[in-house]
Length: 209
Image (cartoon, rainbow, N blue to C red; front, side):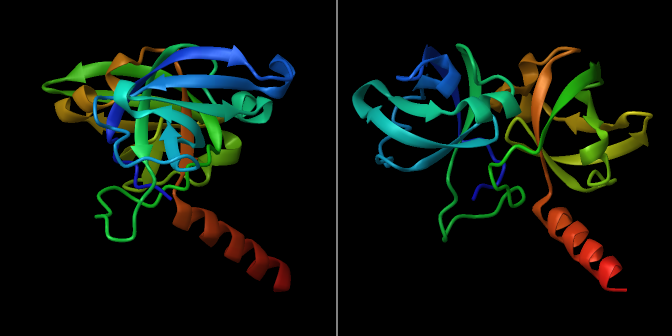
């Protein structure tokens, strides 16, 4: 479990085919900030751009760790198949502050950046989501974009789903990879955990009725 509060900026420095070949996924090596891995052990969970991954090996002195990502996960996520910057977040501990919202680290779908421009000191980010996720996106609700907990400021339904708008402050742009986005970029989306359960319960109630 995570909170959507990015705790470090990382960089995928190696993306090699898995031992059985590319059809089975890839082995990634990630460069983390200095000291980031001081409390990390083999088997710990770290989210990369919002996708929960398991640390299979690490080199604390060099602040690097390795992980195996399956072909299925590569197919369902964006930005994890090649070298490049990633948002990092360690798994939530029982005594940690819940600064964002509850994030499972399970990517629900891929969104596309449709607009990204400065509005005064802030930036407006608009993302298009497919129909399967659109019903979970609500005004002033929470959503995770590339692992970052954000608040939806506007939602507009479209023929293919919806377009939602987010206001990004300078701090978020500096502390995450979101400042590097551009129109057309693909991003990992995770819907609010509470919305997921509400939809399930309402569906069961409707069938029972």
